[in-house]
Length: 538
Ligand code: BGC
Image (cartoon, rainbow, N blue to C red; front, side, top):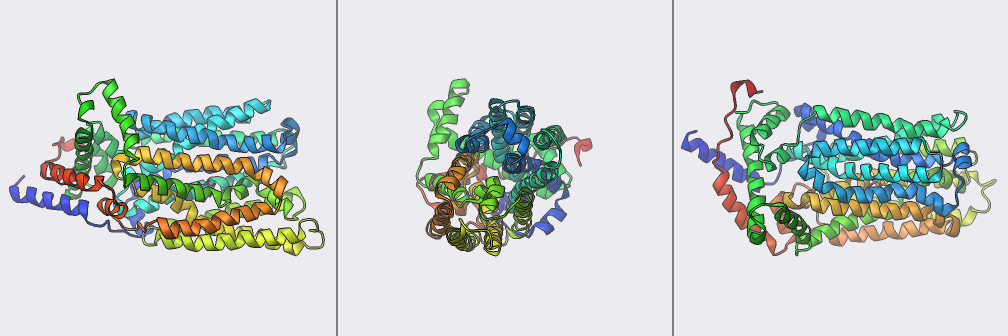
């Protein structure tokens, strides 16, 4: 390669690293990246399992033959719902290691095998213990997928559509919840235990489809590079971007990934000289130190913001509706199982439909203002439901219109959650961390999501039973507080590059990191990509 070309590449690499990412609306980005879109879409089946497993329990637990088979008090009932979230909490923690060791792709396969096991336990459960075990095992898998899928998606995505691709996962979650509602609705007409066993077994199809299908999709090029499989990384990039390997864009992106992997290694050498030299003990210590690094100034603030954001995403009360909608609607005066299940199905539709605008325009919209607008409306909805329930809870007969008013408010509430807190709750934690800390940091923010989700699932039936309309006051308080949390603590991250994130969050490590980054860039920006055979060129 000529010196001037090398210099061009060097300049390009530096400019690309330090300039703000150009963003676009999802449609344009997807049309120009069909293979990436197809891969990300396929991986998001993981989101469908997440939504399906969360949503299916809501209708199933109201079915006659289910109640007969598993007679429960409200605490046990809450636990059947919540144990999935407990498993998911553990699953998120446990996934960082296999994701790095065995690849993102094979971790998805492992999660699917676990999912099949859990689904079989649930669908075939003869007693409460089996049911609980099945939900916990499925939870392990769902928690793992909720972290790995967005990570895999973001690692194959070109920067300009990364935000939309992450919210594709949320769209899949809402789709999973939606089909679970309607499958329950259809299955209630089946006689015998098949009415709940069928919806619980149907999820096996999702697990098999994802687990087998993902094998036909590529490894993450970033993971390949981190394992020193540089030529494969180049081939995958070429396939994903639909350019030959000697196309300047492919070579630039390959080089950029190479630089970031070398940067991580250099940083590790700088921070932990005592653990260099390989060996199991050293790599274990480096892995552990990675968690300690999350508590450094600058980084800790990000971990806290990501985790608190997940806290509010859950404590605003959405999942009380997702899990217990039929019961809530009955408590709001809707009579008959069919009517309340039908009203629940509408929740699913609204949740799915209202996520679309965010998928399409997230990379051009501001995160902060969207969250705050939603917090205001969600607070108002909860207050209105609380007031109407307080006035009419003992007297719904003759006041059906008031009951329907409450149902309408739950719809407005869910729409606001769906365009803001649902997707953005996942997007911000995925974009605020530097790449080297992303897996570990996301395992913490993701587990915060699941732990809080667990608490909500556990306490909702108890709250509904013990304090009635006070449940809505309780959620209104958290919706209200979430507004101020975003206002005072969450910076606007739209269109920010990695270095700007460091500046945005401050911290002592940023300057040293930048210094090392400059050095690594200078060293590798002129590197020529591996020469491959002509037959390898796409
Ligand atoms: C949340 C889930 C919730 C779903 C509803 C997700 O972003 O993490 O807990 O059930 O949105 O659509």
